Amino acid sequence: MTLMRMWHIIRLCFIPSASARAEYCRRKRIYAEVGENVEIMSRVVPLYPKLIKIGNNVSLTSGVDFITHNVTHTILNRMNGCEKKYQERIGCIEIMDNVFVGAGTKILYNVKIGSNVIIAAGSVITKDIPPNTIAGGIPAKVICDLGTYLTKRNSQSEYPSELKPSHQEISPELVQWAWGEFYKTRGK
Image 1: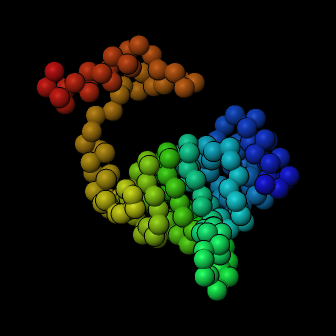
Image 2: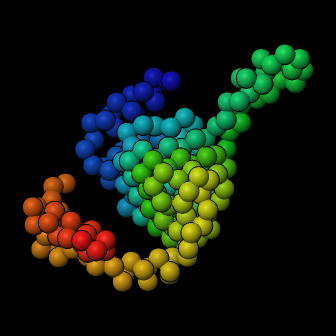
């Protein structure tokens, strides 16, 4: 790890908000591009961050990993009888505008995530994700289009606005409401 990369990681650990971390990354030009209204939960600078472009209105939640390289060459070059010397593989990652990437997602190199996309938590993105879609899984596949998701989301109940969480805390009343909704759909 380079000293500068380590320094950026240490600095990111002391920046309390996801939007402030994104601003730091933009200001320090850590990534190839970081758009406006971006949230970066991670405090880790991936290897080869200049191969990553992040559009506007993007939320990268906890544990999102960018994998800009493949180091299988280290094993291949040590195999018995290996005549060819393999190089490390590298590639770019581009995330377009209005994208939400769920927690624990891994994004592999040579992938483009289109605009207006939601990626489910725990997904592994190995191929391009088209715009206006919801995707998830291992490997990630399109689950539905954005319109279908919005229709379903609009039909679901939302907590009363006066119970809104504050400072990452929820009130006892919101806890009670959430458990009531949980059991309502399960016949309890």
